[in-house]
Image (cartoon, rainbow, N blue to C red; front, side, top):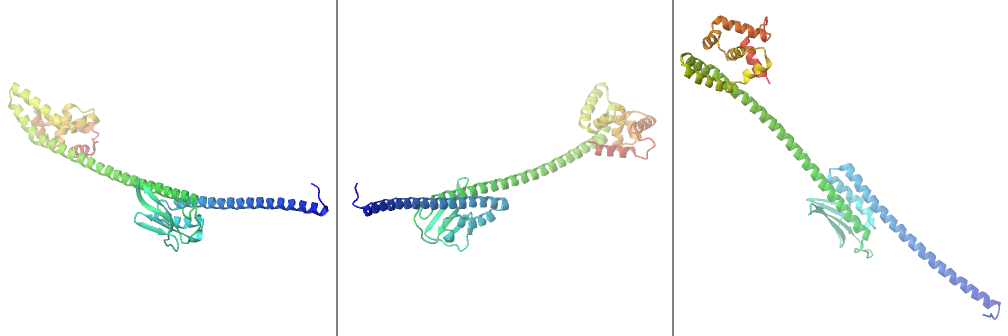
Length: 315
């Protein structure tokens, strides 16, 4: 292209430079706008992270007091939304209600349910008290929907954990009380069992056996066999004391064990001699031998008292 003069050439070059600068300015404006958008997104993400971190701190500080945690959350949520100054929060939880400062309802609302085991037990509600530009969900951002749903999820899981912990505590306490009751019942059963055993043993020794011995003295050979069998079966019933003596005092002879049993039940030397068909002096010798084997020689201990005390304390 041929320019008519130098002035035309300069004007053309200037226009090209102006156009280039305009394009550059537009590009810089786009970059600046993108920068601001990125900064805005980063601020929003930072607020979201602060909200989640703040909830974790509330749980750590107040767990298991769910009321204090939810009250603290009503202060955390407003500063985590896009327009904190016009954000109001209400949390419904079972029969309780928690509100942020200067709370009031409006037509611009975002909410989510709090569920435990599939049942709705509460709700988180976020309101803007002033009309703002339309966004993903009314005036609310998509990220705010994600955040409020995540907060609801955290509260739901926390509630389930607290309920499970309380239930576990109740079950542990119930089990502990049941164990205590069971031990008490078993203890009473053992005492009653021991008392019944003593009663049976005493009645047999003082009432039944003397009669059997008397019958045996006048019985014929065949009758004595039946009486012997009767005595054997009866001894099986009343044997706990005898068995205990046999285990702990192996040096006692069977006759001495039988005499111990009679002494324990209050029979006198003469009564024992008559029942066993022996002389009084023989029974005296048995008593001396028993005291010697039980390490009672030269000790001021009554034999009948010792034998009864032994039976009461024996395992």
